[in-house]
Amino acid sequence: MQRRHVLKGLAAIAALPAIRPTISVAAPFRRVRPGDSGWPRAQEWEKLRAEVGGNLVRPSGLYSACAMDAGGSDCASALKEIGNPFFIGDQAGGTQVSGWLNAWVPQPSAYAVAAHKPEDVVAAVNFARAHRLRLAVKGGGHSYQGTSNAPDSLLIWTRPMHAITLHDHFTPQGCSMAAVPAVTIEAGAMWVDAYDAVTTKGRRYVQGGGCMSVGVAGLVQSGGFGSFSKRYGTAASSLLEAEIVTADGKFRTVNACNDPDLFWALKGGGGGSFGVVTSLTLKTHDLPEFLGGAGMTIKAASEEDLRQLLMRFVDFYASILFNAHWGEHISIFPDNRLGISMSSAGLSGEQARAIWQPFLSWLAGQGSRYAFTPHIGSDSARSYWDVEAMRKAGSDGIRLDDRAEANPVHAWWTGDSDQVGAFIYGYDSLWMPRSLLTPQAQPKLANALFEASRHMETRLDFNKGLAGGAPEAIARTRDTAMNPQVTDAFALCLIAAGGRSRYPGLPPAHDQKAAQDGARAVDRATAIMRALAPDTGAYVSESNFFDTKWRQHYWGTNYPRLAAVKAKYDPEGLFTVHHGVGSEAWSGDGFTRRA
Image (tube, rainbow, N blue to C red; front, side, top):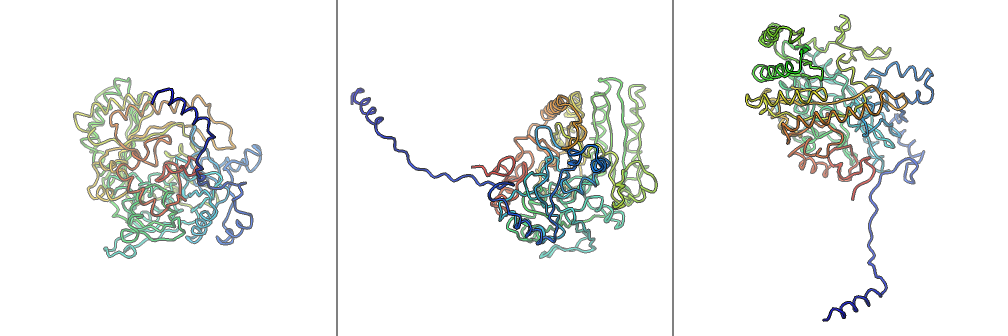
């Protein structure tokens, strides 16, 4: 056929009326917000209120009174407690962090069920599912990622559930395993409550968080590290049984024998993704005779002196401290300081001082190059979290919840005070593989720590990597949903920057440029450390809000299995949190399902 005939034919076709097929495209599923046509009517909210025993509340921002009247008494009362994590946690609209630059700000839910029993949680879950509501779940409210905070949502707030029960002999329901000592902790309890019951009063140990005001349930679901994790493993690795309300409104008791896939997912798969945990039963362990630590700040006279100090300490750690006795962290600062804050388990004060003596002797032999004052010791392990005794002794190591109605054991470590209400500029974490402690790799590690610290304080948390720890602790942790890299890491590298509280209602605490500069400095320092271990993962609870590789970094090879559990127990995605399992199917605010 000649070309002109083809063109003529095409012209004729073009002249015909356009015929387009009719394609029906379903609108994406959207949750409803206040003001939408599907938002529950007032009488429906009242029905829910009656079903949960009147415990339906309208949360407000922590400092909304200050936004309305900065000079009023209500604002003054709230400001008085701005540094008290227990006050913040006792507010339905409270978050322990006051936001993250360009990421999230605290915004209260439209309604909250203050759950006092599992039946309240069941009612709230069923109501949210029936009315297409965005759900948020909060216990302690410590999420750096803002996952216990969602505007226009229904909040399930477990803080009122905080009972703790000790068991001399516990066997998970439906299992035939031998009974072990254990503790059952409701979802609203904090670790100071658990330590008081288990250690101070019960003379045993439960692996939990280092920060005493952190919620028990959230920490376990994210994996959970404490000062002594190298000896006992993650908090999740001691989980024996959990009670949880799933998206279908069913109350389940899960363990290795009942719903074992869901049970495994709760051991480090992240909070707020699989259901609402109402209680956890954790194995307790024999308490060592001593718990203690070693602390000092070493000021180097020059950058070259700091380089030499880091080389010496890395070698000292690898050869002497890389074992189940030692945890906690070191920090390297831009002004040429090395901060050491290490914990010890199972060592007397004399033993601990003898272990550190070679390092201290080396420092002393360097003349004026280093200034330092060491503090090394141990005490009875039972007294480690004895708040009443520390209160009577006037200890400056803790701060007390001094409200008239406060629980007398509610206190937090003085060293954690700067975290209360902090506003995050930037934050990142990465696990450091044990291969970096070999003699050949130590110079690279020391140099990277130095170079990163030129941009931002760079910290190694040795207790947040289990390599070098007790074999049984590592074995238990391998049977959790965390990124398997945690068992091959000797430490978690943490790099962060932030400023004073920036809750809505408070005046700005910093200028925008300083915040942006801090965020960029975190990124530069992290890039230096990541070049050492480019394929390493990150800890879900302490990580970068903007991490595009979060599935790989948080869970590694475990993510496909976690996704399958999510699809089984929450196929419609009722539970959605930022960078949680299955969240890739939803918009960033959790309201619209992606095509």
